[in-house]
Length: 236
Image (cartoon, rainbow, N blue to C red):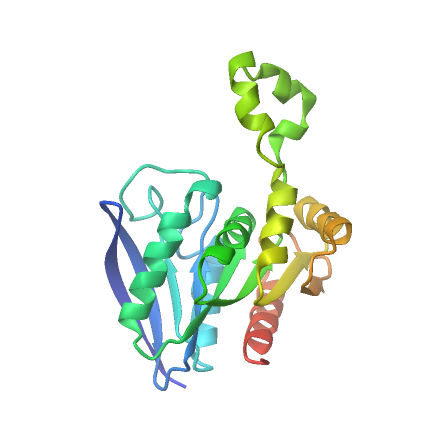
């Protein structure tokens, strides 16, 4: 199926954000929003997000990818993954405006973007599913040396917040939609999240990509991820 790439600009709390929507010739009512994390922008490491979006759109799935505030071509100050709910919400609003056929959206994210998606999802009933790749669940406050550097007057603020693994697990437990977790076979973050899944009994479909690095840095691994994502998203 043919698809058209549509460049767009939208607003998030006064900052202009840049994105691209892949519009299939005959769009399905379910779309995919790719959330970027870390220092990445809408293209992704090794062009992974671009190739994923084009592949999914050829199967009829509309796909939007965008630069959050302070990254890529978007305006604003950079912020950590735990503070991008407004960026995701603004992108969701724009996605539905661009694609009136949409009825529901799957959010797809890698590393800290996966954690951000997991934390966001319980607040938006339009999200029917999550694809989480090697979610980041490491909290530096678990490190005693780091904790000791926090000023005494600030410790009560951090003490009241649950550790990141617990917050991610709790958010997924409250979420009633579908969840797919894709883990690299050769990645410490993936191994760490696998332990979180077991400890907190996270309800999700899990796929392991044998030997893969954190960002799936080969054509073979990226193709496996794209195929697994597409098959799962279209299976329910």
